[in-house]
Image (cartoon, rainbow, N blue to C red; front, side, top):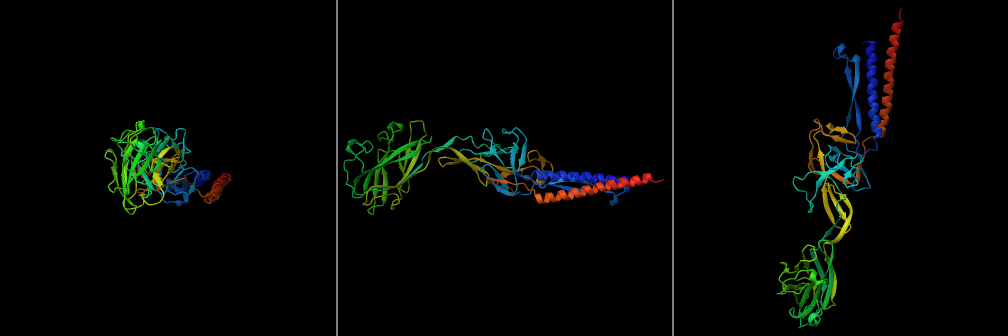
Length: 447
């Protein structure tokens, strides 16, 4: 081996350790970068072909850089519900443009926050991609990916469908024999008819408005009561039910057993639209509003026949024990949450929720074969294979954790050790070059 060869080997070593220093510097610089994966310098021998195969006395060195993309970083709690981390395999699918006209990339940097238009993007400017959910919360088959938007909902209302009434009617109440819908109803107090017991309960329409519904009772016989369900607002705001007076939604007879439990509910012959459930304890009443809101049918649950879990008739004061209604007034968007399955759920001030997006994950046969791009993201390559796109927690994909971020996989102690060893090796390589130079100078000075 020549002295010139020794010098060239020393030069190759200097280049290799310079590359190693660059990799270590990159790792240290990204110790706090969300989702960053540690790079490692790989060294391999380089033989001078002119001196023959297998002659290790003239082996130089070359380097490469590997990044362990598949290594899981530590998940750390974050304050924002749109900060997302992946526990397990997979990558978030992102695009460089909010309208999906840019390049498609993959990342585990989940520090997403809404931009001015409500689209989620991370600190590198990549927009999170997902499937928009329909009104029923499901994703249509074949749906296209779009930017996940968390602010395009102004609010949500839900019309009432079910009402439950628990009340007692006093059994010793005097019987009224004058009640007849043809001559007067409790609703208007016409014909001198005044109910023995009445309560008004608010329900909600399709636009989140409140509608007062009054339920009245009048004892008309032993264990027998007339009931009326009426609208306590302007009577003409609701369509007429059969031959009932405008504003009277339903009317009929409620009968109790001798032990005070509910026996049966029977709508009046003039109430042609209300129906009783098969178990005999609920009354379904159609309400066709004339004020521009959608028609709705409200089922009033009076209890289980033969039981006192709803309406009862005991010799104690008339009282409404409890009433419940579903639905809700209009509520504004108050926040979002992301489940382990990647479902983005909007939360409203009235307590309602709505599924708005599903965030898929992409997995690869060889994730370490992905190509790195600026912004701690990766691009598909021939070496990585194509992405397999599926729901979080499905197949080989991991789960998504909201209000969390995946930390960098850099270990500072290891990197400081690498700095020391790289510096020492670089210094030693310079000694090889200076020594060879001194030896060449000695040869030149020989007489």
